[in-house]
Length: 205
Image 1 (cartoon, rainbow, N blue to C red):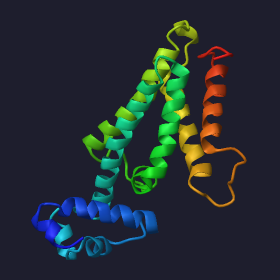
Image 2 (image 1 turned 120 degrees about the vertical axis):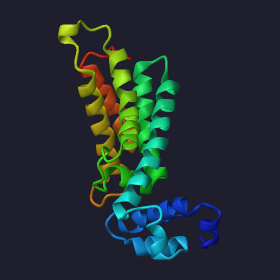
Image 3 (image 1 turned 60 degrees about the vertical axis):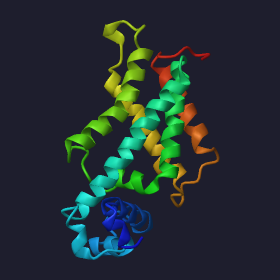
């Protein structure tokens, strides 16, 4: 991208796009602000008009990723309704699809060391994505007496961890971790077994 983008007010996004490309190629700590500036077609000094440093730039990439991710999770859950199990499985597929389609954002969000509490907006967007799973857990467990009902936050955290684990081990081409089953099948069956084990869905659902 040329310097022309700066004059049209697009430099900030051009730098984010450059960072995403570099994150995919080199990881979140494998590039410098100077490299991001060069890829965006501007001088290194221009970067500091918009970002305090590399972490600030990566945090913006993560924020944009969480915005897309939260919308995608919400859409996926609604798509699975009225079946609660189908909704959980749909969010799992959405998680895998996001990691494949937006690898730079995914790394910025989950592997860069940037805290979701770095900014209020980042925390809000992260919470909105997790909130989709918490809402699903609340709906699933409504029929269970309160004294035997698993905490919704625990259930949602387990499902999130399962999604993340399948992505990291089997959906991103990690060496030595090939599975004889497609990642989608692994995740859907795992979610089903987990939810049935808690009694949240009938055995034949």
